[in-house]
Length: 79
Image 1 (cartoon, rainbow, N blue to C red):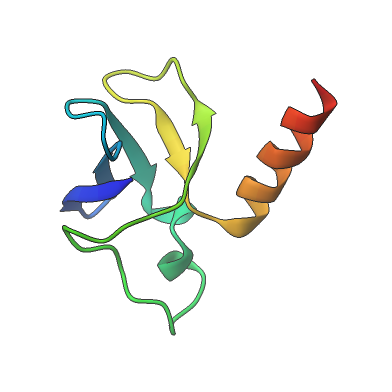
Image 2 (cartoon, rainbow, N blue to C red):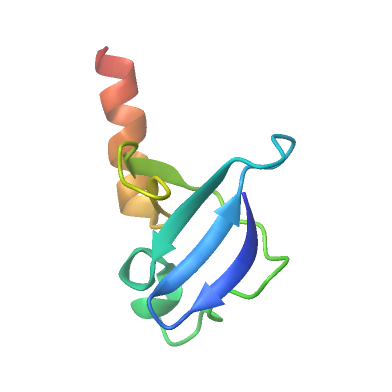
């Protein structure tokens, strides 16, 4: 995912290679919220994310936190 916009509440991201497919990473679901050593998201940054809520409007809710990505991987293996 590539960050395409940033607001006080989070970042809008676009799926790489899928022009026009977007998602949203809440500020609390970006590592910079929890770690002062991590820079906040900026347009052009690349993020690895997982889907938290695909039905959220207007964009799916995503997370860039390692713990959430780890949980998502575990759940996919159980399917």
